Amino acid sequence: MNRTRTDELLVSRHDAVIEITFNRPHRHNAFTTPMYDALQAVLEDVGGDSSARVVLMRGAGSVAFAAGNDISEFAGMTTGREAVVYETRVRNMLAHLADLPQVTLAVIDGLCVGGGLAVATYCDLRLCTAHSRFGYPIARTLGNALSRPLLERCVHVFGESLSREMLLASRMVDAHRAYGVGAVMHVAATAHDLDREVAAVVEGLLQAAPLTLQATKAQLREITAPGGDPEHDDRLLEKVYASDGFREGVRAFLAKERPNFPG
Image (tube, rainbow, N blue to C red; front, side, top):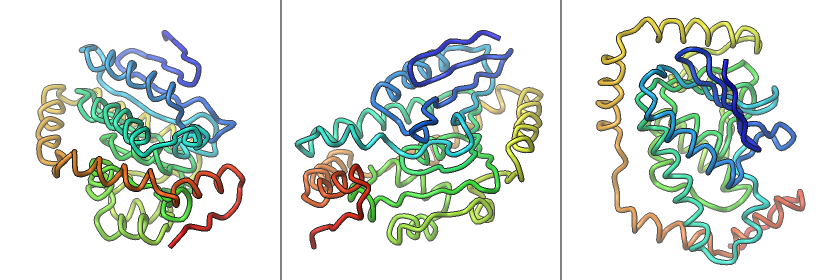
């Protein structure tokens, strides 16, 4: 097995299977800008590797797949435009993830929220442990907003009603509700059981016809391609990120206080 490492990302390979681990367990694997950039570079390399068949993504430790973004980075943003540039970086990385010819699996053990949930929904398949939870509680925490492509992926994976509940009511979704709507394909009792199920799924994928899987992925990408006007979406995001409410959300999050959003 060959192994390479960046500061916050572990990449390993065994035969035709590539495993990417988000490696910030002390921060619940929250994403940083260097982490997004490293992940983008890895996905670009993987996309051109015809010998790779399956890509696994998981979080280090047993607390979180990934608990959103590192909010300390938002504290230095003084304009909404800076945040839109940040969101564009994330969208570009997720577009590369969606475009991979390999089948992608999110292996989730614990919290899967914010940016972590975005990555998981852009994977082809999701498996989790019973204590895993999913959500976008941004209306009660940061006071920011999702870009339209991320929102559309959430709706495709969790359905409209549950997406509204996660985003408007800031409700977290447990593993069994996620399984009930088809957002995850398997709920394992323990991390050990999860690894066994992942191994079984990977074995089946490696036995499948590669061109069939690639053609199906290409068809699904066309069916679920994001719509809307990207410039309009950017204007909406810029307004939200430039607001006093967002600045209060970031301040309160870093101070570990409850935000007092202006009306």
